[in-house]
Image (cartoon, rainbow, N blue to C red):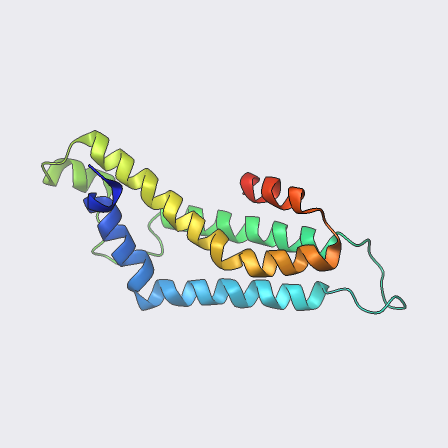
Length: 145
């Protein structure tokens, strides 16, 4: 079974990528990172009080904190609507195999986290450019997230 036929992935994509509440969270995430980039953007040499990789490091740490918060909140189903189906609902109420449910949940979380990294990539690359961080470090730091 391909992952796009998995009912967990289908329901999760409908939940995470089409509902207004989740779309506003994505927008708030981008606004937060953009504001942080603006605040940490290197000023003229007279006002510079930090080392050059400061901007990149701040953006990366902020991404980590926001993703950890959202991961814990979504894991606790705090941000989900009431019609969200839990793992045990899928196991007991559907004829799906447990393997299909586990793989669907894993793929959905990978897609969701990949989406968060993808929408933040332009801000991360802008921070990398002003910080003078090597491009090889970007791949390894995003991999750690």
